[in-house]
Length: 106
Ligand SMILES: [Zn+2]
Image (cartoon, rainbow, N blue to C red; front, side):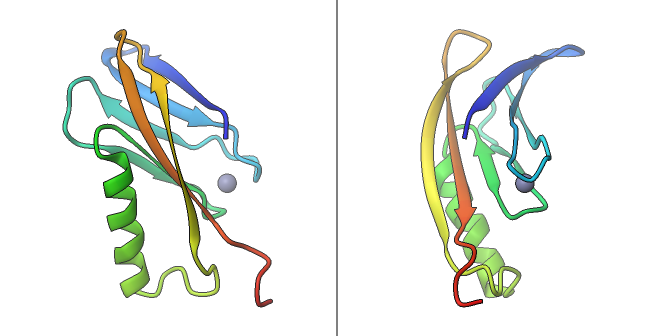
């Protein structure tokens, strides 16, 4: 996925991490400069991305919790990926994302 990092026009301390999803959506996750909290967005098609320190851990916890509630039934497992982007403040921004395995077992 090609992620784009933008600074929120109304708040320079907020970064928006967006990508053009194959389903036509443009999911946006928010991250506040220096925050320990991660932001995330879960697209209607099942793709999900997390932004911020500990993005990978948060993504795994999120998917594990969904699994216990069986919300991803029929979507099988997610393939998890990690990357790092340049943030608007001269640092690095960790991003983790999951793509559901589709077209399996009907
Ligand atoms: Zn999508």
